[in-house]
Length: 159
Ligand SMILES: Cc1cc2nc3c(=O)[nH]c(=O)nc-3n(C[C@H](O)[C@H](O)[C@H](O)COP(=O)(O)O)c2cc1C
Image (cartoon, helix red, strand yellow):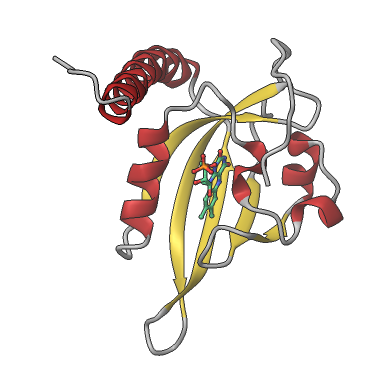
């Protein structure tokens, strides 16, 4: 469940030796989070376990990044990405993440596993700019869809 949290401009920066680890079931519901995940997300273990991983989704993140992530991991591949996350208090923290599927002995996917480390400042700079442009394009295309659907539903001509 995503919460109604107002993002702030307060940044939390990962330390050099930190690893943020979490595991989910096949639907993205959190089944495990390590101490550093609890610390950075600002949620208690009880709040995190059983909750969808989008609980820490930041509104600055484009949808396409997560579409790519899910298409890769559900296709048994691993995925690396720069991700801006939002903590319970609205602050943000950047991570460089690796997400992989986990398998049972027969090779069926049982869930997903993610390890994140402190990202390179140059990577964050590039990702922020690229994600900003992607988000803008996504907003425009959604506005276009709403506009089109309004005209179609109201029986007006749409050019
Ligand atoms: C193992 C794993 C770790 C994930 N870690 C994050 C994360 O740190 N931040 C995040 O916003 N989404 C993460 N996701 C993706 C979320 O499940 C979700 O797709 C994303 O937050 C977008 O949410 P939405 O599709 O509901 O908008 C992770 C997914 C998996 C399977």
